[in-house]
Image (cartoon, rainbow, N blue to C red; front, side, top):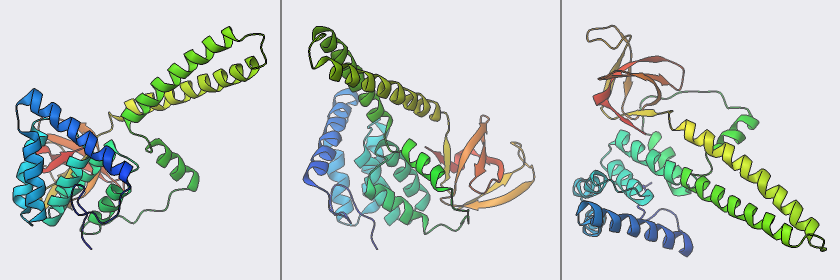
Length: 269
């Protein structure tokens, strides 16, 4: 089973509208990068895609990484880079890029599929109990919209709320006034709800996660060279970052184990 590639051969078919917006967002990102950083962004993405299609994954990675170095922010770029790393069997790097792509487009089924598929190749597995249905539903709901989507939704609700209040005052005494009042009330409550959701997402930015990029690494009991090894983890294993020093991160794995690891061994999302 092959991992799909967002700008060339994909393992799933996309609707014309979805594909159009992917290209549009990527085009805008590349254009801004070209103007601000003086890089040939369009040329690099074309070169990267051509190398990918020809099976030259190392060269594709070089082109895509050059765009990341120019601070290009794009779901398709992270996705394509993840696909290229996967085909190089660099599963840690692939998972890191798919996780970054998912943060930008949390409902994208291609990203979710490829992320889950990549994790099938990991050495470290965690047999965790299934979460309660309500907990799973709330977790999925919290992650269903990206930060940018929440911002746009909050702005839209604010504008609708202002319009509704103005319309209600102008139409007061007419038959439509009660409908406008109820609509304004619902919009206001929705504005507060989405505002709370936006605050929650903002606070969650402080929760960073790590992916091991090297083949294996020792997790130590303290951020000190020569400290005892608690356990060893392998490429692609992820964990939440709890604390940090200049050269170490304290991480917590999915099974609850904690320890310190050198920061040079991990990628952060």
